[in-house]
Image (cartoon, rainbow, N blue to C red; front, side, top):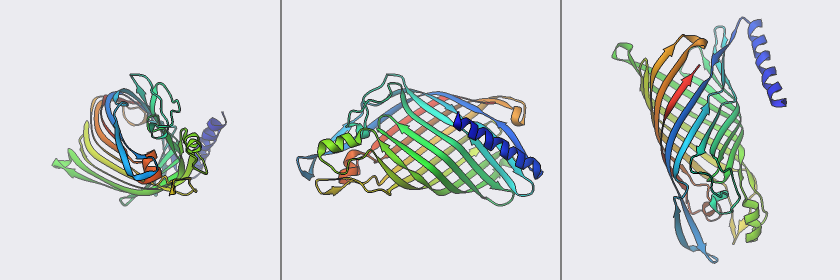
Length: 327
């Protein structure tokens, strides 16, 4: 209730400010994605033998692979037009979730601690507010997110960010007499937040590692690039993102090794969309599209990497097909 009141207060404050300055604040719509996918996920781990970290055994776990149902709510999308200056797009409460068709499995940080997670929700992503500001002229714009959370059951941790800010360079090049356009977008930014690792403190206590903790604060530099083509009813694109976790809080130590959450998260995906139904324009427009997405995800925040710097990682390949509606 308190969060809802804060959102409504911010909404009316922006609307009032816009009216007072001849700016225009408007509702632009929402959107929903429904899709099905199959994911092949493999966790590479290195388990040191006894007390010798240089003599490991290697393991590869693919038991978390399987079919998923993906649901996404694009959030309440609004726009604030600044007279003579540009526009700001505000999105409230965008949410998405992947549901595991085959049922849940025990999770925990690095799939080791055995902490029990959700039996259905495989992944979930949500933010309180996302915003983008685009000046009236130029190719440079700005994006930001407030209170974003990424949950992954099988990895066994929550990534959260209190604040995230990016500088974006976007350019569109018309082709084929304007019927087709080439899109280029490059961005770089930084976030501040942390990571919460399910059951890590219990595992550290069992190992005799000190101090024991489930969480760490992080600084998250990031970069992204997207290229693609689009026409009136279709688009195809290739997108890649890179994010570094830099630990800001003191970690535990085990066998003389200082544990660190410093790690990398990389995602590469190619996607396509075709709109087969369109009705109305502006905020009242309704569209329905089919889409397909094929992607690869790499994340080396694992127990073995955290304690011994082995660079083991989660590697995930997935193909997603579904229907997208905006209204």
